[in-house]
Length: 389
Ligand code: GCO
Ligand code: MN
Ligand code: MN
Image (cartoon, rainbow, N blue to C red; front, side, top):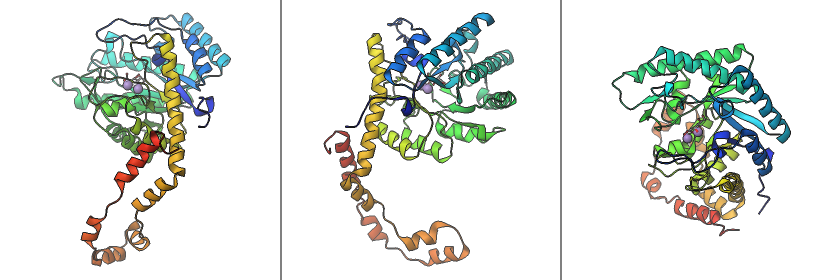
């Protein structure tokens, strides 16, 4: 086993709202005391994290005066300096206050939309001031329980206008921010707009400056929708749009659980880590999860440590996978190359199309081949269970 101690160069970050989650749920009161942001910084630094992310109101309460705002931000900036932690991502809370109960940037009420945009601009200032590289839009209230209000199409147009406005503002200020959309199928609304990674990727192409926008996909969100998160992340990578990632875990078909990374779907977590590392993903390894409601504060820090350790263990397993001769031989056998056919099909020309159409294929032989996936997958399982070291 190599060293599994998390270190800043691993780029692990946590939302202030994640380790700060007090264990409230729709049926019960908080089970833990709130923690001050600076206190959390100290603990995260000790555990080897690289930084934090925050909503505007995780740091500055919504009803804070301007003078108090400056004092809070300066104090937090001192905390960052002392601990060496950075702010990797910033975002806006557009979901807690009742003003946003029927949407924020997509609300049918122009006053709510304007207030939401005002709040985002201030949150962008805060993010830029604290040095965040990515600014996230998670539309927690951007959706509906009923479609009688007719917002399905209008909501998208309103969201587009708002995102274009914010991006232009940020550029005008000279901020060095990239924007990331975070899709989710439902919760807290019955249905959220832009429910999946694919929907967000499609929507980005309709913005004024698509290059400034990417994705912040979340393991739990795609899993809630019954989708394969590894495939979703691959699509974001393929499009050059993986700006940030929310790592956690989730049982399919349940309420939004925000479990510790790797707590539930270990195999998917393994293939995810392998995908990110093989693709050379350079962004934050950001955990958007929280300790079980059963836990006290000690359980919170166990949770945070566990997220990072599991990532590092899976990273080590990914390297073992690459170095394991039997696995590599099985992979080699699985991928059948054919130089001549690959040459023929790589790029269209009239001549190649003609040659391909004239070609005959041994359908029966193709259908009869066993690709060896049972063995390859069992070898992977054995590797993950530590039976191959
Ligand atoms: C959720 C979301 C949020 C967002 C956060 C930052 O399901 O509640 O994942 O935690 O990630 O608001 O955008
Ligand atoms: Mn989530
Ligand atoms: Mn999230």
